[in-house]
Image (cartoon, rainbow, N blue to C red; front, side, top):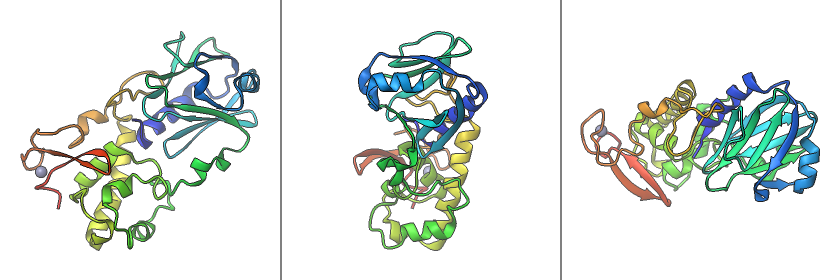
Length: 267
Ligand SMILES: [Zn+2]
């Protein structure tokens, strides 16, 4: 499932590829992907419009087309791929350079909307801080953790507190900080809070630098895999030796999600 680094990678790719290009037409092959407006109005609404700007909020990608916004939520298996041809796309945008911007989605859980004010969408309004923004300070992070009886890992994934972290990066962040995913958020010492805070910034930035991970179906805007996968320390490594201590990596279920960690390194 794409998280902040994967979406940011797609955003940066699209900035180079599609800004200034017009959407000549759009083919909607699976209507349920278009959440609003109605499919006919959606098609009319985007046709002939120029792509002016690419934005990201949490795990959501936003394309400004003239005075409206295309809000794309990839969810589990969604992909946005720029290509010479239509791939197995659920929605295909034909651009003024003769190429396509394909929306692919194996499990068809992704959502596309066209609207005037993306910031008013309820799931956007409810989002918490952007972890790579200046506003996300150590003090704000301390406030988020204060008095929370929730385990630290599900808390990091709670989009209402911090936007953009999912299962993979939460596991990697906690490994880097040497904090167990099972710890209650308000039990962390100041030193541990500082370590987790730094790890959030470092791991996400590293994820972007290596163009995201490609676990499952995550791909960049060219349909290529990212390189962060080679740098993963715990996610998906059940039973394999920890890179730091050699102990086998454990997998447990926590808050309904598969959770990987090293029980020797992470306290
Ligand atoms: Zn270890």
